[in-house]
Length: 399
Image 1 (cartoon, rainbow, N blue to C red):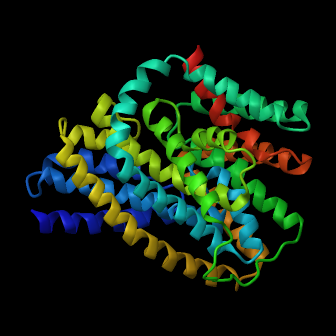
Image 2 (cartoon, rainbow, N blue to C red; image 1 turned 120 degrees about the horizontal axis):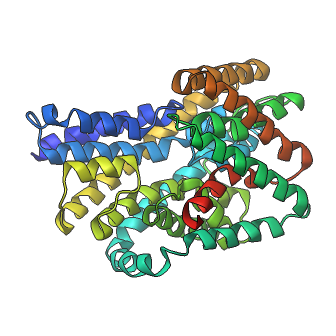
């Protein structure tokens, strides 16, 4: 049985590499496939092996999904806010440093989760009933605080409302994968188009052994990411992108290196804390956890310890794999004409949007790109364009 679990851990890591580096392919899709074929699979393998596969895949994905965000500008919801700083690092020859910063966040988050897990369980049990009816109002306060910090408050409010109603419309289409064209347009293609306009070039990527961040900022970012990731695991409707915005308001004046650590931490913490939420509240907050809950309805603290150990093993291996793949991306991308790279990436996003969402996705991609260009040209923080996710969540809780 132990040998089978280790084999499925390796299979899960391989699946996580696939979902992590290919834009538009999500762990939820693979988890659903595992769940739908489980009657057949369980005749050959035990249930622990299938759950271990999902855990290893999900953890590995959270380590590698920053690669397409940094090098291709094609984010998922967890990495959307990391596109712009990641792209700036890339244009300064420090794409690998940006990747290393997100890996520090992811690795720090899972280690912190493992250390604090036993203490987090009673915390979730206590805090959930106290604030579950007020999360919408908490988000309103976060948004107001975010807008008031902007110098041009009127334009920032306009961008938030415009993107927010755009998000409401998109989600009402009831289509599959709506986040891919919406976030790729607002944060990906818009960034790439602006960089073409400025005639940027991708320099040779450095592979420095030193990283420009101190221990204090790293710990601050990881702790904030852990807390925000826990909130997304507890409350329905909250995702990694919303958690990043909450964390940004908690940690004032977060510098760019620490912000990338934060982005990495939130995504990994979200999954590990989702396991805690399933154990304490018997509630699943994402597709992978839903699949786990369907495969095994009841599990105890012994199973939790095994799952955390599998997560730590997958995380340890994923760091080295992410660095290897990142170096391949860095070597390739600096040798090609930047304009050709950008056009190729935009074409890839266009094709993936068409495959994943159909002609309607192309229309969403076009409008999203236009919305993403507005803050870039006006000098307003693109964070306000996260209204596309925040406003629908606020409506979900308040109305």
